Amino acid sequence: MSSASSGLRRQPLGLALLTGAVMTSILGGGIFDLPQNMAAGAGLGAIVLAWILTFAGMCALANAFRLLACLRPDLKAGIYAYAREGFGPLAGFEIAWGYWLSAVFGNVAFAVLIQRTARYFFPALEDHAALSILSGSLLIWIMHGIVLFGVKRALVLNLTSSMLNLVMIGVILALMARAVKMERLLFDFWGARAQLGSVLTQLKSTMLVTLWTFIGVEGAVVLSGRALKPAHIGVATFAGLAICAGLYVSMSVLPFGLMTQPELAGLAAPSAASVLRNVLGTGGQMLVMASLLVTLLNSWLAWTILVSELPYEAAQGGVFPKFLARTNRFGAPAPALWISSGLMQVMLFIAWGVEDIWRWLISMTGVMILPSYLASAAYLWRCAFKNHLASEISRRQIYVSGALGVAYSGWLLYAAGPKFVLMSVLLFALGLPVYRSVCTSDAAG
Image (cartoon, rainbow, N blue to C red; front, side, top):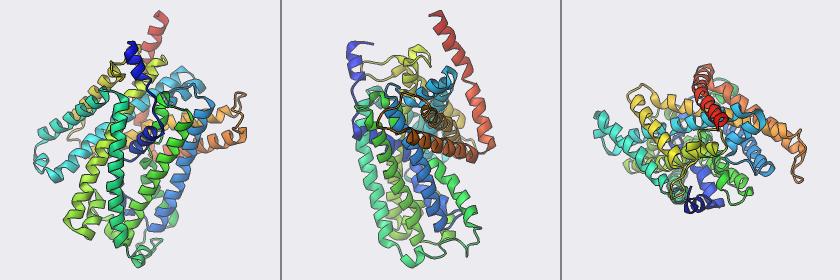
């Protein structure tokens, strides 16, 4: 790596850029389908409870990441480094491998959803699969090109588009809020008239939706090697989490003041477009579709950064093959980016035309990333029994935060279901030959 490249590579990321990375890695296009997804099996009361429980659980994980950043600022790209430090090199490799595959699945899912959204503006895509694949492939390589010219430049663009995205979503929510009727909002609050079952039954069905919405909360941790100050990692994580939580709750609750639960449950995706069409007509629907495209493209850019950053950091730490630790003259992890984009391209060809591929991709994205949450929280819990604790952090705080993080991560894996957990085990096993190759290379070197 040249000295110029090294200098560019070490350009620090401030709080604003880290917060933008967290926010856009969490905030995907799913926000625009929350009205239907949340109302499908629950009344407003259960939905509010579900968000409270989910936010509390994600705060426990976010606090675990914050404490780990303070306790071990020397561990870069903490998602895999925490697992390696706490549970050995194989655990570190598998966590890095799973997180990387999760990001790949997520980016292909973005390509699929963008194509579905683009059909609203370009109906020709509906009947021409080749054109859809071509445009999806083009977007993969456009994102690749943006990140190839430098991660910091890409994050500046990401932050700028995030501001536009927030404005558009804010306008949508304001238009909904303006039309809300309080008597309709409070009607059948607990879903008794709609015969949705007990509050616990409603809560369980709704929680399965909310569990996936906060994936990406670890965005600042993955970029910890670039943070200007370690303390910024925790602040950025909580700030991004709080902003996204406010948007999610608003998008879930406000539609109940415009339509009844059965009406919301029957809406087509993206359901927010149908809700706003009832308020503003076709213009409202177009606003939602345009905002959805901006959100998806912005999230895709954030995850393209993450999908290249973690293999680079893992290679730097000797967990992935050494050639992935190289950067180009702009300081971007070029080999990791090329391999990631190539794998996304192959998966796009395979996935296109598969029935219900969107749901499968989203489910696999979630289940492959959950072990990294569990390992990070478990390592924090183990730190409570170590002697190298920061003086300003109490042992009890570390113990409680770690235990809560482990419990919530375990619940997430349970909620994923045995089918996807078993599929994830197979995908994790596919990484073992790569791990053996790395070990052999290290022994020879």
